[in-house]
Every structure is written in structure tokens, then in C-alpha cells.
Image 1 (cartoon, rainbow, N blue to C red):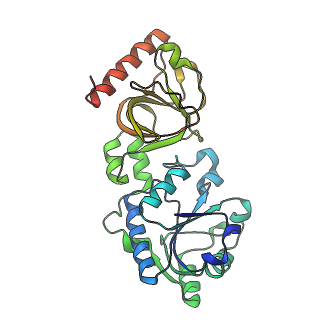
Image 2 (image 1 turned 90 degrees about the vertical axis):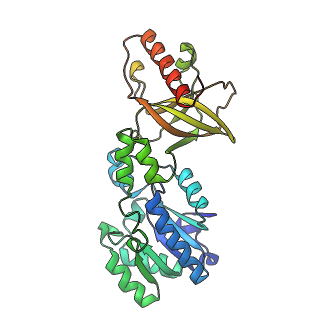
Image 3 (image 1 turned 60 degrees about the horizontal axis):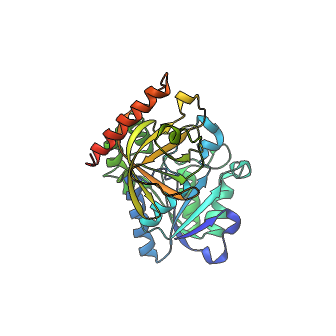
Length: 308
């Protein structure tokens, strides 16, 4: 899959495609249906299937940390899109300059002149351009003049119309990993590079591999039985997602204690699948209480995987 970062990197060879535009947060089953339709259009037109998305996501740009919790980082989003067979992703930097672009200019200059879009699929509630003045009807009228077929994502989403990123966030917040999995089509995953932490887990007898959560808003919180993937190796473990209230922490962090694993993995990329929620995050009065609870959590997670 080809990744094009920024409008300035769209070249002459990228002219001619079928396109869909959106956040694709979570790349869930509703998205999958839209992307199947995109792939069918691509085959019919004999043109590359192309997804346009934004970094940061528009709500993150405008609302900052008050934006809804993100389900997937860009790297995971690209991996999931590639797995579905998407040929090309255009990642637009959503900044003030782009936010100020008039809707007609976006359609004329980017969709028609730069990309030569032959078929476009967007939500019928899609708003774009300066002050969100562009809408589905504008796309239809400008598309008709330019020979660009415009259709709504609803035409591809009959079976999964009730699946949404919002519903998945709600399921994750409630600790309902099974329902979230049904909507995503896969276990919920957090991934990132392993960083140096406070080394408190090591002092307590439970070494952890830590991943910083870039935004303070996280869709999940608590202690989970997990399955991690590090350089192709699968390892079971127990993870805490939160801000370490016992240590008065303020930074959101994923801490994973991996069972029977002692390799140095600092700087390596790790995928962590959440399998079962064990409990909510909690502040303990003493380190003795915390250590005892971690031991209980480890035993519960091992039992979940049949390792006891």
C-alpha cells in the first residue's frame, strides 16, 4: 500500500482514482463495508482504491484534549487498511491552512485537478471546507459537472449501519470488550514503542513494558488480561491502562507485565490486544496493598489464558 503524506506530495502519477474520505477511526465493520464498495468501484473503473484521512483528526484539531478518545493511531489505521486491500492512502495534515480552504477549492483543486477522482464515496452528513460550508449536495453538483460519480456510504452499509466509532468507544468505556470486538471485527489493540518508565514495577517484583498514550483521553481504563505481539512473538500478560493513581501520576500510560518474558525490548514496537477486563484502576494506600493486588491480577489473567 502506498502512503502519500500531504497534498504537496500528490504527483502526476496519482491522477485517476476512486476515493473515500473520512477518519476511519478503528477501521470497524461499518468502515469495512464502505471499503468493500470502494474496492468494487476501483475494480469497475480499473483505478487505484484510495482513502483520504487526516492527521490530526479534525475534532482533535478543533477541540484538542476535549475531542473524543481516538480508537486507533495512524500506524494501526494504515495496517488495518492495508489488510483490507486498500492500494493508496492520502494522509492530509489537518492544520489551520487546510481548515481555511474553501469547500469549492478543495473539490476543484484537489479532488478533480490533482487526483482526478472518478468515483467518490462519503457520508451524506459529510461537511468540509472553511466553516464546514461544503456538504454532500455540493459534491453532487460539482461532481456531475466534472464527471465524478458521488455516492453515500449508506449504500454500502446496510448490514453494519449501527456500527460506529462512538458505539465502540461506549463499549470500551464500559469494559465490554466482547461487544467492541463484534463491532470492530477484531480485538481492541493498543500499540506503540516501548519506553522507559519509572521502574516501579521492577521494584514491586513485576517488570512492565510501557507505552505512552499520546493523548490524555483514552477509550479504555483499568486492568486487563492481554496478548502482546513483539517482533512476531506472542506473549500473554496483564496490563494497566491509566495514570498510576497510587503514585499520583498525571500521564496516561499502558503498562504491560509479560508472563515468563525477560528480553530487553526498549524502543521496539509492541501490539497489545485487550482480551478481558479484570477491574477498574484504583488508588492504593500502601505499596503492600498494590503488590498484593497485582499478584491477584496476574493470577486472574493467567487463569483467563489457562496458564495456572
